[in-house]
Image (cartoon, rainbow, N blue to C red; front, top):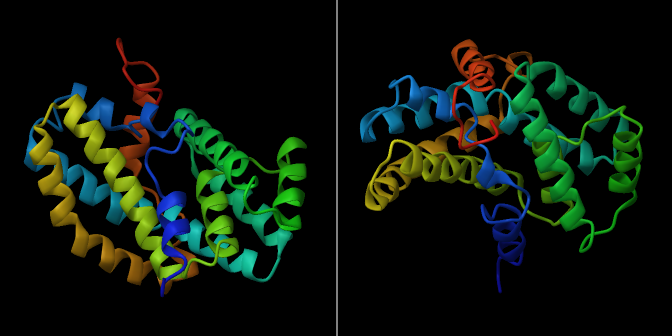
Length: 229
């Protein structure tokens, strides 16, 4: 096969990986209960704005920074990025979700790709010096598995988007074909975002979507909840 990384790319970004991603709405449940997201148009707007205003400057940027740090075997940079990521995730549920998903991702992929960088990173996680965020682990393993960076970023956006679309179908609710239509329309947007994230200004990393943070915090106190975040 010409592109030998495709299998690893699909495996790493598979939304059905048993890491618990299905149990998190990342604030969407609050938007639905407040009737801000209530139909196809509002669901698509929420997803697009989340990708453009939140994921681009936070998780996706940390994916590419962790990828580059792994490429130079720089554990100190990995730890610094991990700690920065923790500081930026002000909503408790989102912070905990990121940690749980990341640790479970490491648990899966260290079975197939052993590396001393990951072993040292795990030591720091167990010592509570690092948290093991999903975006950091994703970037590290994408490099170790030989996946090109731009394809890694597209896959990360796709993984995020498919999770939000699936949750929208369940929560709003939307029809299954509505969800597929949204995913189809997202393709050029995700491609553009992946390209932009490759060259993002480091000083912009960590820009916050305050509204999303507030809705994520409100989720902790919803009267009834289907999702953990």
